[in-house]
Length: 364
Image (cartoon, rainbow, N blue to C red; front, side, top):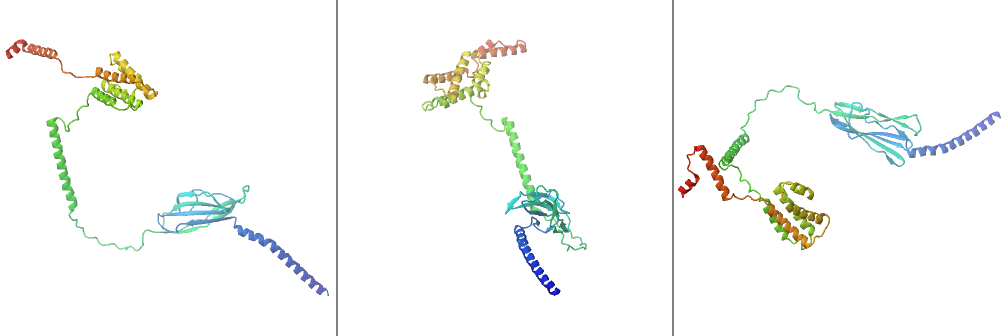
């Protein structure tokens, strides 16, 4: 009887245990599935663009970290330990967020100067589960195997080869033709140099010098006549007319009196001319002309017709009265110069020369 009751109780307990286990599974399995859907909290990958290189070649090695946004990581440094490989360059990309996760990529351009099989060691990535946590965990970037080939094939013959026979040097036609052409060219250059030297000895110059520029007053008067004949006043283009008139007078003053009139204002021009020009009336007329031109150019002053006509007369008169003309000496000056030369010659001869008037009478 007691055995029967004990068996029944065991059956009931087993049934309750089954119900509890089923309930526990229903509670735990959805949570596990939810964690699988979001993926692991952090993943670390390593990539290379090639795993077989020759000595001295470069490899692009990348560490890619895919983590949850709640994690905080310690980013790799620029000089991380990559074993036998030397870091030549590096690029750290900005983090990218995708579907609630953060992807960070760290690229290293590396190289090795030996042959054989090498391993880029796993790199430990430290991370924290939250921003306030001080306890970190480590996840390693996978190691990568690299094979470095030698530039030598290994099939070269090890035995010493016999000495090769001497090579015959062919006749270099191009070399000697170039030498002959150079000699001819040097001869032509020498002949031309001699001709130029001869010409300089005979004529005093290699190339005919250009004719001297016309006098400043001729250039100014021609430019004034061209300005007066233009239609600028008819079109009421006063600013351009007076700008041209001012430039003509400034160029004349610069060429005639060696004053930097093109770079000076009116007051400076008059000040410099006052040192070399004695006629103050001429200086006053030039100042009046340039001042009127400044008013038209800069103050938009509209001149009256009589003012424009007066300015033209002043310009021509100033050039005519101040022009520099080289005239031959007068007959009286020539005669006085000849007498002075004759007297000097008579003094050196001890008074043996006839008088100048007697020599002229004898010639007549």
